[in-house]
Length: 401
Ligand SMILES: [Zn+2]
Image 1 (cartoon, rainbow, N blue to C red):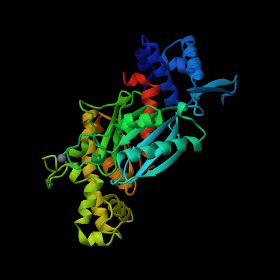
Image 2: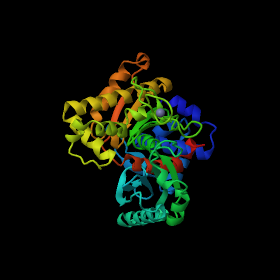
Image 3: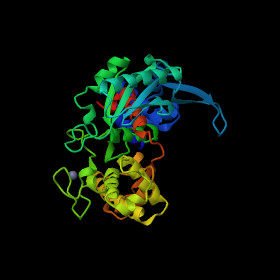
Image 4: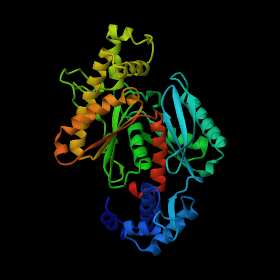
């Protein structure tokens, strides 16, 4: 992002917006001097100093002197203060609910895992989660008053008409109940949007850089960040690429149409196809009653090892995903696509290769390059993203305005 666009956007803004935007510049820079901040924000050094002093007093940033490599007098560098405030992120997934504690730069301070099954009452599980948060804060020497919020990542969208991973939680006001149990504000968001916010907050992505995170767990969805905030569309279903047409063999989908990514290229769809292919299923070393996730993980591992039948299925899935991603990248004129989530953990490089090849051969490539990154290493990315949601909403609220 160039300094001219920042200058234009910061002049005449309210003090809260200016404060948010300056904090955003510090976050995305890693560390920055007051002089550079003043140049990039297009504001006077006096204005910058006032905002910076306020941010230091609030415990959001810290300043330290250091000699520059070129010699000369020591400069003061500003960076996010990771020692005082924190955010909690939770991914509401069964059978393991992960809770992470993050510093305000999105780095992980600690985590705990809670077990829960479909047979458990949601109320009992929420009480377990509240106890887990309390334990996590104790273990890391922090207190609820230093936690600026709890973010909860829900798998998938809440208004699915199809096989709903969330039916277990239905009619439960998770946020209100968890707020009562913990005394801390709670924000809810779907897992793909959380993963996108994690990328934005922790990946050093400047506010003007539009991108999408394709998040795969059991299903696949995209979190789209436009102008520094998640693009939700009319009903928070933007990025729902599961019902993009990708498959000419026209497999029927529960949505009423045929050939959707949802029934052909998602980890759960691939696991179903594996279960229906006895000779492949028999060689995976999984039991009949194992979860679709366990079956998919075994298949992805076989594919990575080069087993031909497994490889064929995963390569097909990767082509379907690539088709959906190309449509999205062309439509939105994206410069960056990130593949993330547990669904890419086993055979991520195969997906990366297919998506890259497809984007290199499509229309938008004639205009500019579309970078593709794989970020599958952390299976807790949705929980980290939920913490990033809190940081994003609480620390830089101008994005939501
Ligand atoms: Zn469909």
